[in-house]
Length: 436
Image 1: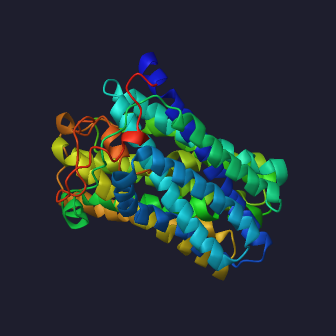
Image 2: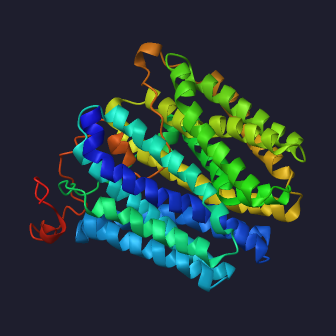
């Protein structure tokens, strides 16, 4: 395990720095938009653009990587992310911010793709452990980024400069990583219609998870401020929810192994709904109460996607898991794009306190749906179940690193079969194996 982590330490370090910037700008924009007088509906639209960028990037970035190589692609994406961060402070307008968030989403998705391609190339043994460390690093970095808001506040230009600095710094350890050039990226996926027919509970669960967590990433900071929390309180509430997801995801998943995961999804959804109601009832109470409930809510809500993936794997052959995961990512991405718009609409037409109740209602609807599926489907025998692995939605390449999928990291995949490969295309964009 130690040697495996040492071989990818620089990749994890670079991604951690990058995600600290991403975590900061997500919260920063919500609070700054509110201070500038954007309506909640406009804020929701702006935040949705980030996840629309995720969906667009899943089609766009693989072609860019195939054309210019991983290293150049990542360098360009880091530069674009830094420029976009600074541009937010120069042009404070919801339409401009929508396009900038779209660019941010495409860039971050591309960064995930590049780093996960390298991880998949370098790690052959103990992939599960490295995958878990990678996911933990991502969540901790996103959580830590919330507290950087306290250095200058959402109204200061320095906060946007700090985001740009982090995006640029994240490039350095990755650009200096002495690893070989990864193979081109495969982006095939199981059609959503077939995926739903084979695993309806997991497919719908992936979408519901996207709705809930997308709304959280987009509007939680606005919600926290509207219920009276200070900037420090906003950072504490958001980071508690993220850290809760990092802490509870594995214990919850491990407890579901060998059991009917449909029932596990019902239980976890029910607990997340209770957490939502608890947050509603705690509005106006001491900060520690809100933060503690946020920790529990995040632990359950952020576990829904990983449980949905595991439940889907239970119902498919192992050879189908790779394409299925990419379909689930698309479903989750669609939910994540709709979530902030829905949350923004709720905040626009109703009091902020209604938002956690809306979360609870959505989760209860999913519980009802799963209860109907319990009658229509036969449970999967425990011996045929896949093991649980903690995951979060990143890029389609994360499916290659997941130890449950049957993928060969050294198998060359051609994105455009009709093209002849160019052996000189990435010659100046890759390193020799000895790192020189």
